[in-house]
Image (cartoon, rainbow over all chains, first blue to last red; front, side, top):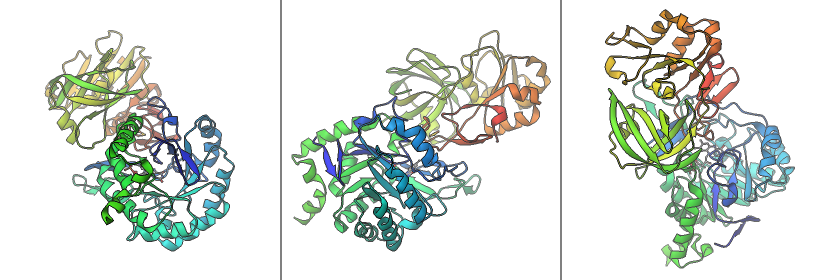
Length: 304
Length: 237
Ligand SMILES: Cc1cc2nc3c(=O)[nH]c(=O)nc-3n(C[C@H](O)[C@H](O)[C@H](O)COP(=O)(O)O)c2cc1C
Ligand code: FES
C-alpha cells in the first residue's frame, strides 16, 4: 500500500494504536516494533502527574470492557525525560494525547509539546468520561469545543487532532465546531459512558461508579458516528472503536475514516496489529478500488 | 514475554471446582517461580484474557490450575483436548527460588508449583474442605471443616507453627482478604521477610492498561507488572 498523506503528516499505513492502550510506545516491544504501525498515540498526558482513580478500575462487559483509569499518567516533565529518548528512535507517526482541566493548562501543555521535535501531532482529549473536570466537559458542547480548539491552534506548532466524545446528541455539530476552529483532523470515538452493577454486593462494579465502554460492543455506534461526521466535515477522520479485524477496519474506512485506530484489542492480542495490517492490505486489493477511493465509499454507493 | 497459540492437551479435575489443564504452546520462554500467563479462548466472542499462575512448565508445555470463578473459567474447565487458547507469557515478577516457607490459600497454591516436593521448603496449604485441596505433598494442611489437617483457617494454622518460619523467605498467596488477615496477625519480624503474590482483575496482564492497580506505600502499583509479588510491608490493603 502507498503511504497516506493526511493532515500534513505521512503515514506508512492507516493503522494507529489508540491512546491509553499503547503506553508510551515502549510496552509492545516484545510483540512487534512500533515502526510497523502507521502511527501511535501516547497515553493521555497532563502537566502534572496524575494518580488516577482508585481500583476497581476495569470490568469486562458483553463484547467489551468498561474502564475508569482516570488518566493516570507520569506528567509532561517525566514524559520528556524518561520516554521521549526512546520515542526519538522510532519512525512511525508519534501523536501526543493531551489532557487538562482548563484552557490555560491546555495551552501550557501545547507549548511544552511544541518543544518536543519527535512528536508529530497532538490529539486533544476533550472526551474522557472518567475525570471530574475537563475531559468530556469540553467535548459535549460545540461552543467549548470551538473555543478550546481555536486557542490550542493558535499556539500549536504541530497539527491538531480533536478527539470527539460519543456522549453527545449530535456528533456532527461538535465535529463542525472543531473544523471551524481550525482542527487539522478528528479522531473518534472515545469510550462511551457506561456502568455495571454487581448484584451480589449491590454496588457499582467500578469505584468511580461510571466508566468508558470500549471494544466490539461499541463498533456499530462508532461506525455510525464516523459516517455522520464524514458528512458534516471535510477534514480527515481517524476512526475507531471496537476494531479487532481487517474487516472491522475496512468498515471505518468505507464510512469515511482516512486512518483507523485500534485500542482495546491490543490488550487481548498484543501482537495482532501487524497481522491485521497484512490482512487489511489483502482485503483492500480484493475490492479493486484504490485505498483513497475506499475512504467514504459507503456514502457514494448509497447515493447511486 | 510472547503471545502464542496454545492447545489443550489434557484437562482433568484436580479438586472440587479446580481443573488441571495442560497446554502445549507453539513456543514459550522459560518462566520463573510465581510468574503467570494470560489465557483466553481463541475463536470465541470477545473476552478479556484471564491471568493464571504457571503451575508447571516443561519447555513449551504449561500446566495451569484453573478454579471455576466466573463465566470464562467456567467455560475453560469444560474445554476438551484440542481447544485452542491465546497465551501471553510469562508475565509478572518472580520468587527467588531459595528455600522458603510458603502459605497458600486455595487455588493460589498454583503460584508455588516450583517449590512443591522440594525438601528444603515448608508448605502450609489450606482450603475450605479436603475436597478443595489438590493432591500434593504439603507439610501442613488446614481445612475449615477439619476434614484434613488443622481445623480452622490457614492463618491460625500458621500461627501455631510459627517456629517453622526461621530465617527463610516467607511467601504467601491468596485472595486480598486472606493476605490482609495474615498481615494483621503476624509480627514485624515476619512481616519484614514476607512477600505476597496478589490476585487482581486484569485487562492486559503486561502493564499497559493500568487497570489492575493496588494501593501501596509507593502509590498505585500495577499488580501484573510491578507484581504480582510485593513485599507485604508495602501493601496498603
Ligand atoms: C484502558 C483504556 C485507557 C484509555 N485511555 C485513553 C486516554 O488516555 N486518552 C484518550 O484519548 N483515550 C483513551 N482511551 C480510549 C481509546 O483510545 C479509544 O478511543 C477507545 O477505547 C475506543 O477504541 P477501542 O474500542 O478500539 O478500544 C482509553 C481506552 C482504554 C480501554
Ligand atoms: S492488567 Fe493491564 S496494567 Fe495490569
